[in-house]
Length: 475
Image (cartoon, rainbow, N blue to C red):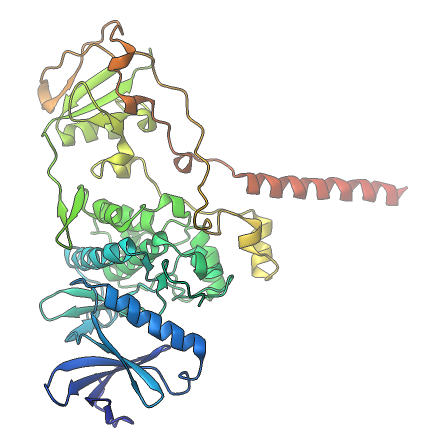
């Protein structure tokens, strides 16, 4: 905190005490109310910006969004005022430092500490998303930690309010901090959704556990190209003692393909913890599973349906060793009769089937990008976020793995894992678990998109035309 000479001595009923920080959307001061002595933080819009109607609207929107978000992990907005022609926001004062300052001072943080901070911020973001508010600028410098270790998300200057009628972001304009923002946010911040905040939250955790800025020493364009190809060292490459689960959770959150990221911040927290959670009193709490025994349901190569029983550790080991066949066809439940669901529905097993995905573009397109002759949002529809209210088509259903459910007789075996005796599949169709016929999401199956195939086909046509023209010239 700076104690240098200040230009402002007072603003409204507040006495300016010190400069806290300066940013693109204002200067933040430590101040004290002259009458009641309350200590607050004042965010003041620079006089040069106070005449810009768009910036004034964005400043007002920041206050409205912050005042709606009453949550222990979000900096509270108290009042919006004016000092002459200069607007200011009175905010809760957080005595502490930002996570950016903490990493700069201490280097990388212990894994448990870093995860704890991110879970706290996720709690606040979850509330914001429930209210239709997208932050769009989550990063270590915008997360404050007080003396009790409580993390608070600050700076809603780039917030997007889905319920607001204001159009403060031009179509095709990117807003945010390049190192932490999602690749689709580069092209069009107007279409940013909750998955953009999840990407930024994952990038923030990346910096906390590695001590390195993601995509450092890159221009915005180079950063974007590396982002869409997931061209970033895995956190465990930079920190070998990092757990495989946190490494995977970060990489999944930072997937270039938005469909491969967690659907919401609650799911991201589940990825980090490896346990199902629910929100209770503004906090995420771990949900106890209904039973210690798990049941795995799958089809053998001969077509027999099998149910096996065991502890979570035994079930997970069998899945990793391939004893249950292709993982995308395996389903799990807590009762021999079902219901069963795909592995991706369970926080404890999701990491076995959900992997980060890149938005790979043909080499010619990437070369065009470097020459600034390529428009990603217009050429590759996967890059642009879907328009609000437009539903994506459902993926085609895969062939059902079986038409009958097995007769099961379970008993404990050595190692805490047992297998049902395989008998004739005579159980009626009605006894089948509905989840056994669930189609696998197209976002998990590798393959080429129509945009890629069309690009290559066009290049092939150009090559053939050039060959024919060359033959004619030789004659």
